[in-house]
Length: 230
Image 1 (tube, one colour):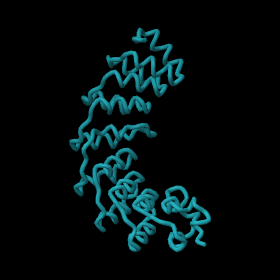
Image 2 (cartoon, rainbow, N blue to C red):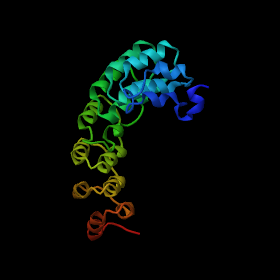
Image 3 (cartoon, helix red, strand yellow):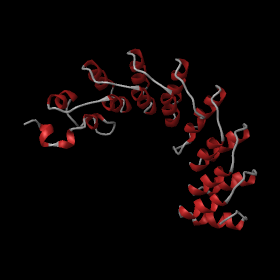
Image 4 (cartoon, rainbow, N blue to C red):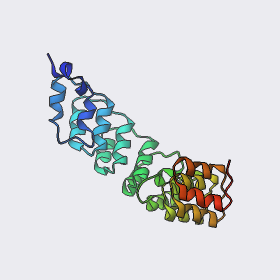
């Protein structure tokens, strides 16, 4: 009886090469020899973990791949993996740029755009709730024509990235009441205060988000400053 029949948990071959556990497990050949199936998630798992040799081996042995391979490589900041994948015909789409921007990997984003990778969404992905807010990615993307909208400011506010919010607002990025409510929901009083000092609108969602998230100091400040509430 094959091990895959005894231990069903190893049936998903992709878990053997994910970004956290590879290196503790035997070579992928062992898993394949013992009946573990694979699919495109195997390749994008290897790419996302930066395991180029595993990706190469998998492709040489017929493992399928799709655009997520490039997207996961970009999201992990693995430029060498992304370059190899593209050199060997791996497809990509806008999720590659999204992954690079969301991970703060400017070099990867630059390379992808220089080589024709599409992008079709505003650059709020660059300032989602990541440590630091990736201001340099936002600046580069904006300078190269990537669109932005009110979600860019609300994403920065929700992540507590006041410097990113300040830069975006000064350079004309639109905002709306979601900027304040996102700051409140994240418990970022300093961000909320700065936004209000610069005439950012707010509505009942600000108090609601602060209350529902348990940020009582934010709720108290908003209430004392006449924030609408239900």
